[in-house]
Amino acid sequence: MNDESKVREHASTVLVVDDDRAIRRTLEKFLSDAGHHVETAADGVTALQMMREGRPDVCLLDLGLPGMDGMEVLRRVREEATGDPATPVIVISARDDMRTTVQAVQLGAYDYLVKPLDANRIRLTVQRALEQRQTSLALAHLVAEEREDHGVDNIVGKSEAIREVYKRIGAVSTSRATVLITGESGTGKELVAKAIHFASSAATQPFVAFNCTAFPPNLLESELFGHVRGAFTGAVADKVGRFQLAGQGTLFLDEIGELSIDLQAKLLRVLQERTFERVGDTRPVKLAARVVAATHRDLSQMMREGTFREDLYYRLRVVEIHLPPLRERPEDIPLLVDHLLRKISRETHRMVKYVSAEAMDVLVRYRWPGNVRELENALTRAVVLTKGDVLTVDTLPITCDDEEQEVVAGGGSAGAESPAEGEPELITLRELERRHILRVLQHTKWHKRRACAILQITRPTLDRKIREFELERPPSQPPPAS
Image (cartoon, rainbow, N blue to C red; front, side, top):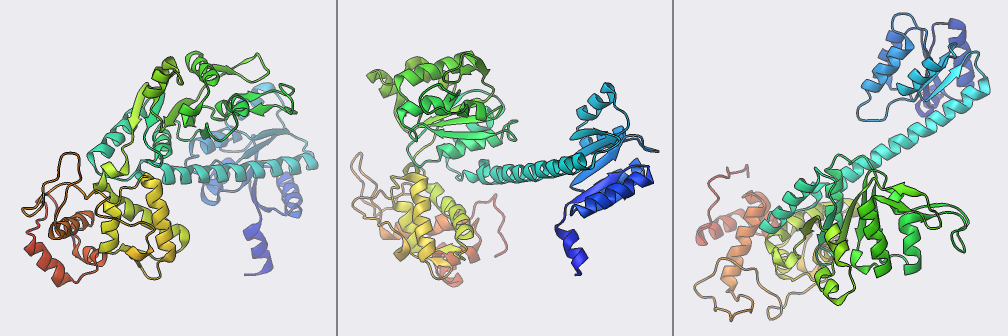
């Protein structure tokens, strides 16, 4: 690659569209000297084709073009702008009337410059348009990442309890109703809030998360509502609060049960009136965002104790989504392990693909007081310490004591001792082995090669165990290529 090609590869591309050859040549020389790669077109049809094929970073567009005029080019560019942000178009025209200017801006023109053109004005406008495009591309990339990382697919499980959560997310995502998410710490309440947001029509709008325990009580009001300069000592400039930052998107208030009674009253008023005031200001600001709140606290008990307002509780609880603790859905653990293992291996640049039978047994039987967050932390430690591609029990930072940990329920054995009421079920080692093999087969959709890798046994051994325990593939599930 020659030096000129290298420069073009890293330079911004500017498309100059004008039917006047002298103007094209002048702009081409000036912008090239400024470090840009410049392409030119003399008519609208050619310009539109070049924009479709090359996607220049900026376009300078004359309006008086032969064939297809500049207004029609602008209209087509806006209509075809799907996916990545549209190329900024700077109109350059001899027309200086208000009607034409307004129409061009309405069609999406970045700026409108009147001929004769000022070189410094052109340079500055092109630079600003390039900066805006880079920002737009970065934001579009972040939104795409957020959609991928925090959509419904990031909440894993097939248990009945988690399926109910999926249904609620689907129902509330089609409305702007206020949502209250409850559940123990580490169950994934923020993931649910993000899934609601990114499944809704406001997915391209901001998602602003605010933890009510992250700031001292005297700063919470300013952080939520914002303040004006001079509102209090230290307020040297205006500050935009989280309610305003959320725009038309979603404001997620985590640990809502930690708000003081005074701030609860102000939040209630905001939810009722759909307006708020910044600290030190009397001008109302409209609340356009949807509010989603979450807590691990028992708000009903707090209401009885007088530490949480009853009217705020019912205002927040238009729709409630309860996340079950991980110990109540052990059948989801193998799926979660598989999902988290792929994510952690990717983030840590490791090649851990499988979990040994002994390690999976411990993971399923452990009670997980820290829920999914604790599971992810345990797997992260294990992945970092694993030397091969199979995660083994010795790398896990947890132990499973039979006298303290509850064994997964379901499918009793003739030799199993019947537990007293309220005590965990006690099963034989043979029954535990049968259940685990069945669980792995279900997890791999009866893909025997994958099941053997997870169980760390040979294919003949697996076939023998299937016959011995009389395990049967569901009739609706076709046999995979294994």
